[in-house]
Image (cartoon, rainbow, N blue to C red; front, side, top):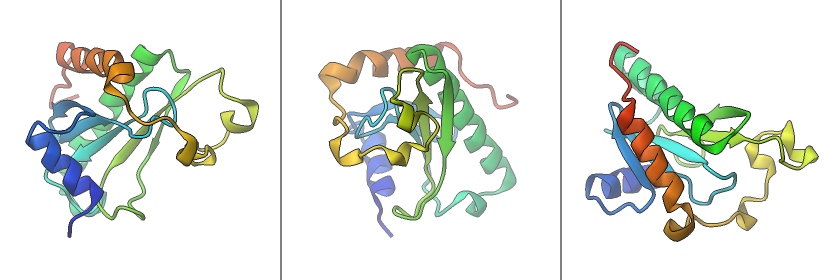
Length: 151
C-alpha cells in the first residue's frame, strides 16, 4: 500500500522533502503542509507501519518519545501555550503523529476545540521562504538536544 505517509517518508530518505526537519530515532520530523497553526509538525515512522499497535513495544515507546521530543522543540520555539498530539490514520492508513502548537491568541471559538475545527482548505501552504527559519530552528534544537534512547 502506498499512502501520502509512504511517499513523504520516501522523499525524506531521498533528501527531496522540503518540509523535512530531521531524522529522529523512530522516523522523520516534518513541517505540516498546510500550516493550519504556525509550527504544526508531523512525525512519520521509518519504516512506515499501518498503526502504532503494529510495532513492537520498544518501537512504540521510541515513536512516542520522539513525538514528545518534537513537541517540546515546537513548544519552545513557537511560544505556544501547549502542544496537542493526535494519531488517527483513518484518512491515510499509516502511522503518523500530528504535533499542534496551541496559542493564546487563537480565536475564542477555536481555542478549546481540536485543530480540525479550522478550515484546512484556507490554511496557508508550507512555504520554505516564510517557514524556513522555524524549520531551521527546529532542526538545530533537535540536533543540539537529541533524545537519548533511555529518555
